[in-house]
Image (cartoon, rainbow, N blue to C red):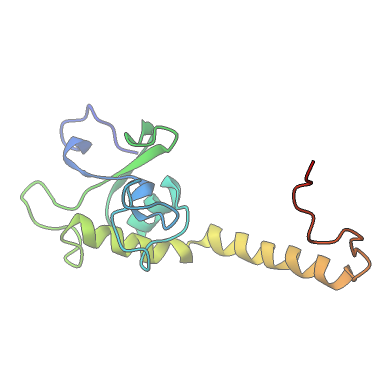
Length: 148
């Protein structure tokens, strides 16, 4: 997509978006930056990049980069909010916070997410129809620790 060394498109100055920023499974201490009610569940770099394309904002995925607080979270997205002259590419998005909120709103409607949810619904419906109450346990619920 975009490279660091090209003079015209220097992504060094673009805004950095880690998936952790909009992850509803993370706490504020772990790196979430928007409210829990507006955050989405486990976003990834590709979904964030696709959402930026939908918002007509240039984005570059950096797979080799990790989130500093949790280095197991690999990948980040650089997004261009402003042109070289300082004007905004998308007038509706003028800050990092607005970008995070918009992306968190769009990620659950991502085409791959919708496909996954539909396939999971089909899988869940099949076992429910065939299962019966034959799997009852003979163990009583109250065992506790035996006294010696």
